[in-house]
Image 1 (cartoon, one colour):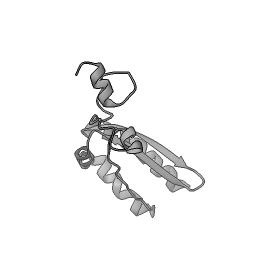
Image 2 (cartoon, rainbow, N blue to C red):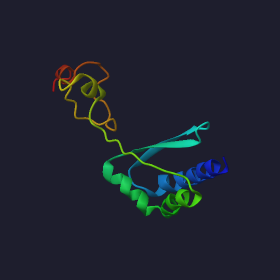
Image 3 (cartoon, rainbow, N blue to C red):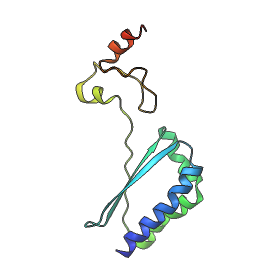
Length: 121
């Protein structure tokens, strides 16, 4: 339990440095499963290249080596934006190229083509 608490404290301390120094960092959420003694960190980045800016944060680089020394197993997965949720769920009829980081041009629900036509584009 001590190692889990240490990893949590280190994560909280490191997160503020990453927020200040890493380019493209949008935010993070830390989830803890106390029964399994597992920490899940979900971070959001502006684009895939931004993730590498964590290497420019000295405290993050140092913190990344600590779990191994503590005997804590770690793993990482990177999940990229693949399209509007409607395209992912319902197929290619939804061809909205926007990412979630871009503002919506219309609040009207519907196929992107319908939204564009309604706005005169």
